[in-house]
Length: 201
Image (cartoon, rainbow, N blue to C red; front, side, top):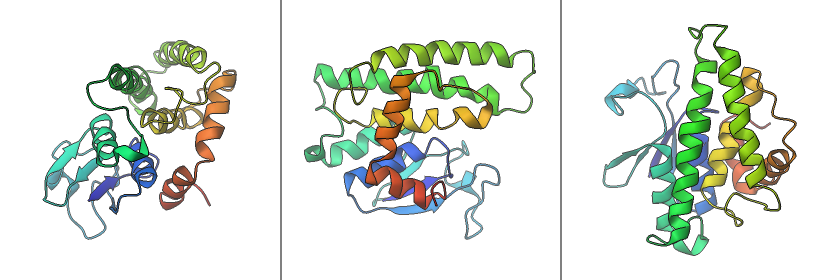
């Protein structure tokens, strides 16, 4: 398998999940600014949408969208228990978390990365993000991870909350999120993925 990623982008989530899975894979840097691979290939010829992550399977099949990719990875190694079994209520709860993180947090940050976003609009974006973070903080009360046990939702939340200091969003008031982030950051798979992306020395 090949994972196309860009350092620090949302592709960090499947990158971590692959390290957690123990599966063999190849890293391919696809910088979101240049859309050019190291060998000069135009990334748009691989993913016409131009964004990461993209997982290319050994038979050449390409899978996009982080929440789908992490579930695919989890299902290759059910013994690792990175996702509850398909068809169970717990699996739907996992999908609920992945959808919430994708639509309410991930996309919530997007305007703050866009230089064209009007300055007077950004405080509203931040207020909405903080209200969502407050809810997540409450959901983490008394739990080490979102689902209780570690799952593929956790690297996604960790990845997205990494962006807060980069765009001036202070989430330090959320003690449960802070403790969660420390717990996730301490996992060897997380450190391996971040080191590969140049996010850890």
